[in-house]
Image (cartoon, rainbow, N blue to C red):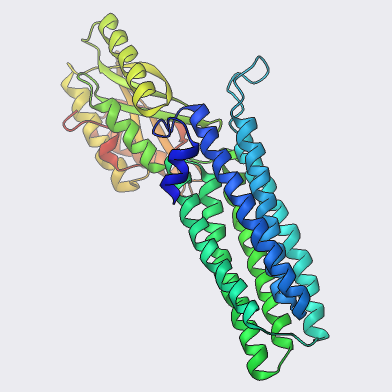
Length: 402
């Protein structure tokens, strides 16, 4: 069914990175979500009203909130597809994140309202009716939500949409909450304890609130500037290091302006012996290939590395080993030796991960002592930097033997 809908309503559905195709995917997911959730709301609110079940009514309102969420997602996808303009040269793709945040806030507001109504039902229980119609509606709801979860996960995975993947998780959670309501209706019928309906209603409301908090956190994180995915970092570094002449990469930064609108910059190390024009030509090729293959706008800074001086190579290798012994999350780059009449300055950049909890001064002192132990004329000049990505495996930063 999912593939049939995609092939029928999404033109050129295989071109998932195309903005127009992405919008079509989002529009399809939003319309399907609105239709399914409105049908579920109508069925549940009818049964809940007829049989006086606050738990079923609470679950119905949850479906109404899901329908509203789908409407907001539709608007978000449409706004996110707007082309860049003079005021927003990076595009409008972050509207998708804003839409997700709005949906999450709506879910939390509805959860609070349902928590209040359910708590009153616990304090003042009312008789709950029961029929096969109740069971049928709830079982149908579980089946529909299971399919919606798979549908949104498939569409969200195809276009890399965190909003739709979150919607898929929300549909999966609805299966759990509706299952709880079904158990409540059966238990009320079997035991005659009408308070069970209110208790389950409280549980469903709490579950909605918990899901809302998680969704707020997930949608707010990219707006605040979260670290890029480790898979993206590893893939990008592997790609750049695959080109001949590249010795290493460092200082990677990735800026996320919404799905499909990511910009990155990094430093690439080349031997000083390489002709600058050749290095520049290779950098142009790398930037073009990354843009076409990874859909990432990359800017590269050229760093010359002295490879003809054996002292530099030996000291670099030893320093990297010592830094790894101190903490594998640390790294160094841009090592240079500046000799003088009485001493030699050893200059390099020392990179700490964001939020580093260790003693930075102690790390610097240990490296200074280590360098001085290599040669009594060496004097350390360390520049401290912060990393803007999660530290990948150490070998990803440097080619073997470089």
